[in-house]
Image (cartoon, rainbow, N blue to C red; front, side, top):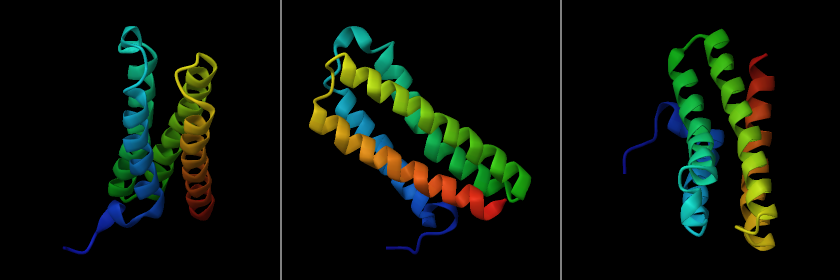
Length: 119
């Protein structure tokens, strides 16, 4: 296996990517009528996190990098809101919610740390 380079080396990107995969798995149980609503919004917001980390990293200018990291941070807040809503609507069990919320919170902490290290 080739050595990872660039943004794929970042732990925060790896955790954000894992979060997307988990969101997609869990969203499969959401009601079909939510496919263009909550399911779509949750998936799009989760994808935005690693995508913005990657895009910012490749910009190579600290100011631009930070701008994309702040966008990713906003997307994490969106995901938190959508997950809470999914739980409260009964689409996620308490254990499924806690599992994915822990992943989201870990990604948030790592992202916040990266932002702090760059400012």
